[in-house]
Length: 238
Image (cartoon, rainbow, N blue to C red):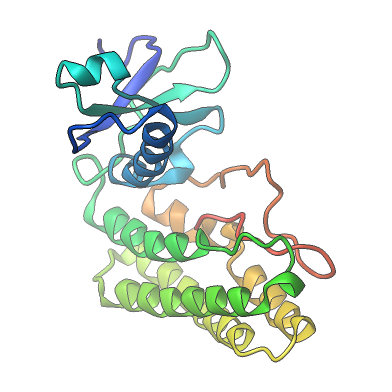
């Protein structure tokens, strides 16, 4: 069906399972969820351009179809509200983006991946070593991100805004590095708060606008990013 017409879902990836014995519905479902979300970035590089009422769904082999050789998992974008459809394609990858947009999103993906590895513990006090390790991963990701942004030759309209963003990222990297070495949770929170503020997605809007990318940050139902005396989480996507 033409993507410009109303449709129930948009297939963005497929992959095949291995093995001769059916793994079971739960195991296949868990695997499909993890793999499809990972494959999403290859099709929709700019997560900000995916509407908040769209989520990832998947079709998997059943026990019966497995017996006939079915091993294919299909990853699909669909509306989160039952009965609502999609209109237009959500595809934004190298086939439709320009070189500057791809360079920015490739670099942002490095940081987003690290931010997504936040520990399961809700509070830093419950797993300080885990949060220290996470902060270290974020710090290293920022180092790599800024290197990638600095190595690209930007068009004049975007160059200054990207340079300004890199300056913010350098400051953020320093705070996250200090959080990684914090001796106690209070010190961790102090640097985490500063580092998180410098990674506020809103600070990237100017650069995104100059690059012609989506400028409305995704919403997060889990309220991530809380800190201070409460929990700590990523809840951000740059």
